[in-house]
Length: 216
Image: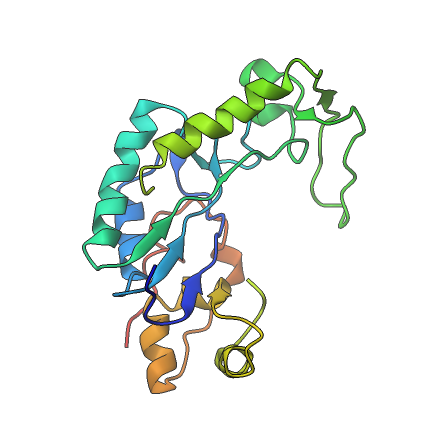
């Protein structure tokens, strides 16, 4: 795999894919951040209807979801950019509201996760039996097959230093890439970065804080 800029879009939950389906505004969001030889890692993409941990997250366990991903993938590939799908399962990190029929989330045990900041509230999980584990493994297998193509707090100077000193080959950016869809170009020119608006990170709005950040 050949990469041009060693600036990677980190996997970021954006909470804008309603009903677990990739949306048309995702085409603009991801294509804005695609550059020739670049690498984008998609947001957390559920492997099943029991895998979701946040509202408006996407998935890739149905044919409808696969078809909805295709325009996004095509738009990224048209810019000769590499696109990875991050498949996941939230396990016990969510509540009954995101589960089919309000059932308990699954985990390796029935021990409830405690919030570190007192904001999130998690539901008591149900422990998987040994016989059920292969079913979850199979969810990942199917999701990986469906994914046809499907951050460390660094700034420009930190990233350049890490690469120069050989401590890494790639640097993944999250917040800066959200606010600067042309981040590799801005780094190349050492241009001023747009400031990100943290309040819009997880908003369901399909434009504000999502695709309305300006280019140079």
